[in-house]
Amino acid sequence: MSRMIIFDDRAWPGCGPDAVDLTPMTDLRACFEVRTGMLTTRERLVGQWEPGLAAVWAPDELEAVTAVETGVAVNVLPPDDSFFCVNGRWVFPAVRFELRLGQALVERESGHVVAAELTRADAASLFETGKLPQSVERLEHDSRFLLRRPWEVIAALPRVLHTDLLGSPIRPVEEPPDRVIRIGDGPLLIEPTARIMPGAILDVEHGPIVLDAFALVRPGATIIGPAYIGEHSQVLDLAIIKANTSIGPWCKVSGEIGATIFQGYSNKAHDGHLGDSWLGQWVNLGAGTTNSNLLNTYGEVVVRQRVGGSNRRSGMQFLGSIIGDHAKTAIGTRLMTGSVIGTGAMLASTAPPPACVAPFTWLTDDAERSYRIDKFIEVARTVMARRQIELTGAMELRLRSLYQEATAT
Image (cartoon, rainbow, N blue to C red; front, side):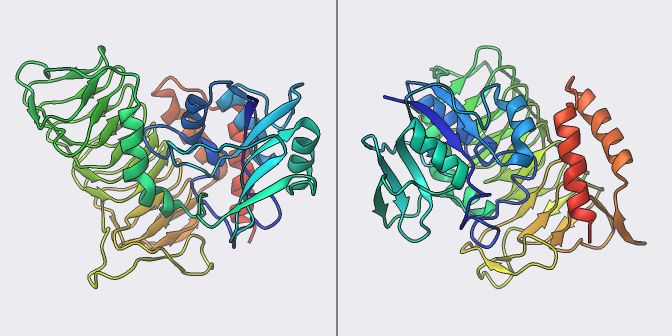
C-alpha cells in the first residue's frame, strides 16, 4: 500500500468558483484543513490510512500557511515509487476505495478526481497539470463524493460527526461525575482531564457525546448528542448545545447552539441563538448575537457567497450563517437566514447586516468601509496572544494578500 497525498484541487481546470467555491471556509486554509465533523478532513483521512501521510498539495497562495499547519511536505513529491492521492474535498468516512496502481475514481458528472493510486510520474503529472495522464484508467461513478459549497459541510455534518464520535480513541465512561445528569444509554466519552461541574446535563439518548482533553462544562449547561467539545473548550453556565454540534479546540460557548461547527479558537460566550452554521477561527460573537436558520416561508434557502455574485440554491430548509475567520459582531447583532460573513469582517450596526458581507468590511450605522489592514493585524495579534498563539509570518502574508484581493475593486 502506498503512502497518501491529500490534495486541494480548487486551482485545477474545471474547479473554478463556478464549479467549486468553499469561501470563506478556505480563505486561510486548504480544503482538507476544514473541520467537517469532530475532525478536520486531513485528520480523518490520515486516521483511516495505515501507511500514513507522505505530503499534501495546496494552492500556491496557501502553500506557506499549509506547511505551518500540517508540518509535512507541501507541493513536493517525496521519493516514494507510488502514492495514494485523495481529494481533500472528500469527507465521508467509512468508505474504502479498492484501486489498483494506475486507476482513478472520478465523479462522472463533474469529472473531478476523488482518489487515485498513481506511480510517482503520474502523480507528478496530475499535480502539475491538474489532469490525469491518459494512461491512467478512469473509474467513473455516478455518486457525488466531493464538497462544492460550504453549506454542504453543514448538510453532511450529522452523518460525518456521528461516525467520528463513535471512532474516537477516548474510552466511554459507565457513569458521569457526581451530580451530573445523564439521559439515555448512548456512549458518553470523557477524556480523563475533562471536567464536568455539578448540575450539567448530558443527553446521549440519540447520539454520543465526546468531551476532549481539558474541556470544561459549567453548571447548568445541557449538551445533546451527537456532539463534540474540543480540547480546552468551555461550555459556559446554562448553555444549550443541541445535536450535531462540533466545537473545536479553545472555544467558549454559551446560549443556544445547534447543528453548528466551530473550527476552533472562537467565542460565543453569551446568550443568543446560533443554528445550522459554520464559524472559522478567531471569531467573536457579541452578547445577544442571534441568527435565523429558517425562512418564514419554510422554503429553500438561497445563498450569495460573494458580494455581486450569483444567488445559489442551497437545497436546504435550515441554514444559518457561514462566518469567516477573524470576523466579529457587536452586541445584539441579527444575522439573516443563509448569511455569509467574509473573513475579517466587523459588524457593528443596529440594523441587520446584509446577507452577504465582503471580507474585511467594517460595517456601522454610519458607513460601510474597509477595515484598515494594519489595524486588523494589530487586533489579530492581540486576540491570538490571549490563547498564547502567535500570528505567523506566513499567515500575516496570506491575510495581507487576501485583503488586497478583497479591496482591489
